[in-house]
Image (cartoon, rainbow, N blue to C red; front, side):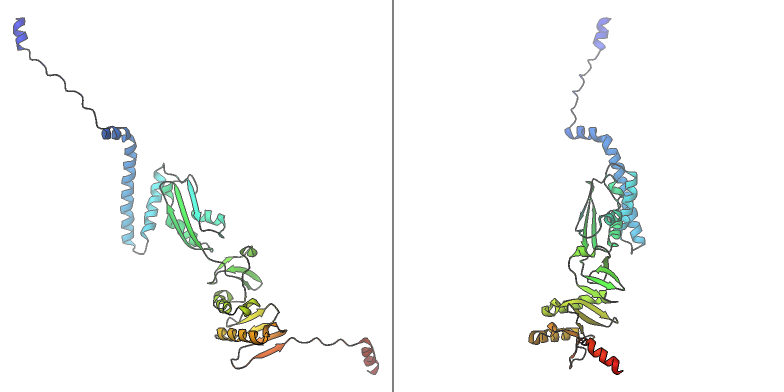
Length: 296
C-alpha cells in the first residue's frame, strides 16, 4: 500500500526564483506617496487652465494672463508647499519702497501660486513714478519685478505750489524736491505740459539757456524767459525757436542779455523793443526841500 501511494505522488516543481524589480520601479515605489498629491495638483492646474481659456473666449477684451493669474491664485489658496522666499525689485530709484510693497501685495512666506503677477503689474503702473512694470513669478519662490521709472524733468510752480514733473507734465513728486538735483523751473498754468519743447529749443542756444532762470507760461498761450538778472524776454506765440535764435545772435554780437534791462520784447518779427531798468529818482537835498517849503 505505501508503495502504491508513493507511486501515485507526483513531484512538485521547484518555486521560481524571485525577480528583482528594476531600479525605475524601486524609485517609483518609494515616491508613490509623493506623486499622488502632485497628480492632484496637475489635474487642478489642467482644469483651471481650461477654465481660463473658456473665460477668455467669452470675453475677448480680457487678457488671458489675467484669467490664468486668477485661476492660479485660487489654486494657490488650496495647495500648499510652494512659498515665496524672495521678492526682488529692479529699476526702482525714486519710487517709495512702501508704495512698491503695497502694490505688490506679497511677502516672503506667502503661497507662490496665490500671487497674481498681472494684477500686481496693474497696481504698480498706477504709481505716478512708474511708467512700465514687468512682474514674474517663479515656482522656485522668486518674485522678480522690473520697473521703468519716469524721469524727473522740471520743477513746476503754479499758484504757490511746487511739484516735480516729467516731460509729459505728469506730477511724480510733491515733496523733497531738492533730492532730484538741479532741474529747470517752469511757472504757470499749462507750463507742465508744454515746457519740454521750449526747453529743447533753448538747448540749441546755450548762451541764452545759461542766463535763463525760469520758463514762464503766459495765459496758456505763449512764453516769457525770466533771466537770472531779472530781465523778462517776451517770446512770440508759435515762433519761439526763431526768436530764441535771434536773441542768441544779438547776445553774440552785442551782449544784449548782459545789460540791465527790464524787458526784451521779441513778439514782433521785424522789431525789437527794449525796456531799460527805470532809473531811481535822485534824492532831493534837505536844503532844497526847506526852500521849497518857504516858497510855498
